[in-house]
Image 1 (tube, rainbow, N blue to C red):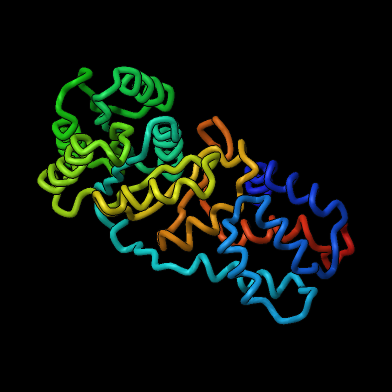
Image 2: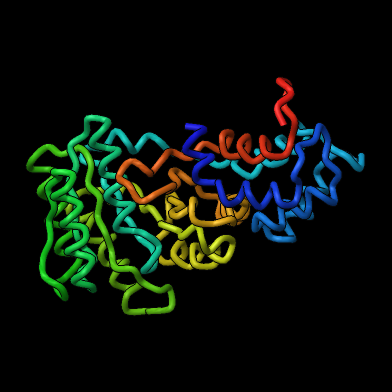
Length: 296
């Protein structure tokens, strides 16, 4: 897993090495500030991190790790996963990698021995229906779809109904990539949520927001807007391998207080990995500090 995290943070780690070519046993706070800012941790958060470190000018790895871990303390409710079918509603703006992420998530469920069905409720763009259908065929997973312009809520209802009839474990429903200032599309999203609940009480069990990792900390306002519209339960960060803004995850976790459940580290169906804060932090710190084995 560490290998996948390193792959995803490759460009971020290169930025750290540019600032600090040689690993150290202790780091001075000024250099640490520069590293964090270059990795797209917002300045205000950098100042907060420094404030909570020991007063000495140079600090050790364990001191920094203690502070960084505190940003990933949030409640994760796993009880709903006992629901059958378990319904994921996937939301996010165009270009964030939503459709590809749905395919990767479906592949993960399938590898875990689950039966999966997809719902193509992004009826706003014909290309979205076609793209998700291609993924469904490639992964040999059933899909419920309709024509462009049809009611997306009806697709969501039919997908959940089909899952119930066929004893399918997991439902993943796509939605149109909507901007938060488009009132009509926001209302449509609220309607999909209501109709999901009519198809199965308590659905959707989880509303997942897809955030483009290349946007870094600027994705926070977008996330807050979606959270106000329908209430977000979890976040997936895409395209982490394509950006040097890997430090933005600290700001996203702090500002949203929502669990980051997966990160995308490539284009293949196996390139969606569970997000582990400890591994994420260790990978960053490993590029800064000399470890006990003496590796530099």
